[in-house]
Length: 474
Image (cartoon, rainbow, N blue to C red):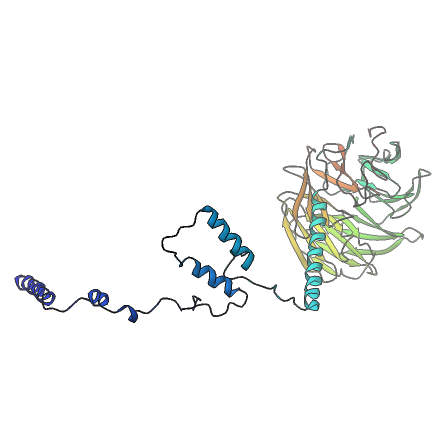
C-alpha cells in the first residue's frame, strides 16, 4: 500500500517537471498562430455549405441580410429616422422580404394520376357507404321501442296447466281460438266479440287438448279432444263438419299443411288426415315412444317436425308412408321437446326448445340434420315464435321467472325480456299482421305484447292486431 502512494507522488513530481521544462501548452501555441492561418467557419460568400441547393431562395437578398449586420460605421449611429429611411430604401430596392422557413416547398406537390384516385375513391366510398348503411340499419333496429308492459290482458279461467297441450291459435282473419278446459272460445281481435264454438260437456273427464286454425281462409279449425278425436269445425256456421279417429288417447298437438291436418297423441303416434275424403288416414307415423307434444309443418310443406316426451325430435318427409322411418331422428335434447318453430327467413332452419331438464333452444338444418347452434336459456322452454320481419326469435319460459325473452339470431344476444305472468307461459301465437304476440299462462291470463314491428309500420297503426276495445274473455 505504501509503494502505491509513493508512485502517485512521484508521478505528480514528473508532471511538475514537464510544466517547468519549457514546452508550451496547446492553447498557448494556438494563441501564437498568425491570424492568416486561422480557418474561417463559413465561406467568403456567406452561403451555407451544408445546404447546397437553394433554388427557391433569392440569394441576393439573403447575402444582403447576412452582411448587413456585420457592417459597422465607425463614429456614426443612426437615429430612429435613419432606421426608418434604411427600411424604406430596402423595401424599394429589394422588395418586401418577410422572414420565412428555410426548408419549404416552393411549388405544390404534383397531382397523381386521375384514374388511380378515382378508383380508390370509388372503392373506399363504396365501403364507407355500405358501412354507413349497416350502422344506420343497426341503429334503426336498436332504436325500435319494445314496450315492457302488455297492451292488454284478458282473463282465461280454467286454462289447463299442462305442458304437453296446445290450447291457443290465431287465424289469418284475426280471430283468436282459446281452449279453456271443456270449451273452445273464439275472440274477435277486431271487434272484441266472444263466441263459444264447441264443448265436450257430455263426456266424462273430457277436455279440449289442442286447437289449430287452417292455414288460409280462417273459416275452419281443427280441435283435438282428450278422447282421441280430431274434429273439424266450420266457425261461420258454428257446426262440426266431421270427427276423425285413429288415436287411442288424447290429441295434444295439431298442424296443418294445406288440406292435410296432422295430429299427435299421447299414444305416441302421428296421423296425417286428408280432410277432403272419407278415408281420411293418409299415413300413421311411428317413431316416438312417448306422447307427441308438438307438431309443425315447414313453410314449403315438405317437412313435418315432431317433438315428443321421449326427448326426440323427428323430421318427416311429406310423402312418408306408414311403414317408413323419419328422415332424421335427433336425440340431442335432454327433456321433452315441446317448442318448435320454422324460420320464415331461412329455408330448412328449425328451432326447438326443451323442457326443465334441458332448458336449451337448438337450431337445426332440416336438409342435413346438423345441429347449428344451442343456447342454454336457464329455464324450461315452453314455446317459440319467430319475428316475421327480422331475424329474431321469441321464447316463453316456465320456472323460475315465467317470462318471455326475445333473442337476436344467429348471435342469440338478448334483445328484450318481458315479465308479467305469475306462472309458466305455456302457449304463444302471433297476430295475422305479425306485430302482436299473445301469451297464455297457467296463471289463467292472456297477455298481448306489441313486440314485433315491420320497418314501414307507422306509429299508432294496429291493423290486424289486438283491439284496444272489446269485452274481456271470461
